[in-house]
Image (cartoon, rainbow, N blue to C red; front, side, top):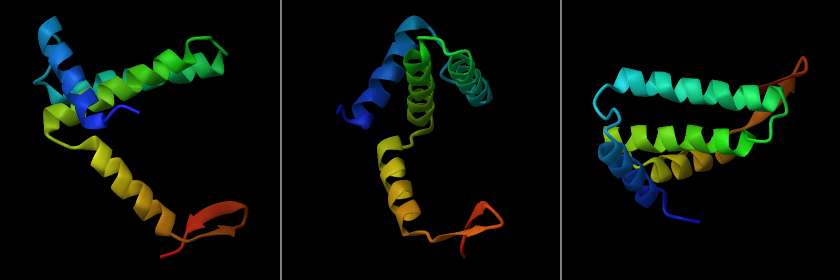
Length: 99
């Protein structure tokens, strides 16, 4: 697997090269949301491009992380480890986190 930091940088550099937005953070969140909606539509309609749509979501997240100076790979690892340590219970058919 490719290092996410390397991918973040590549996504950002491509945005610069192609003249895409790298300054309007609100717009980047909107674009990311739009890509997630497209992925959902591909899933809901059983379209063959679901993987590509999910890749678009990841690309927008990587670009946003690079713009904001966040090491997304490190943040993901930290969050996975945090989630693995959490305890959950089933209550009335709903999974709930124990405090």
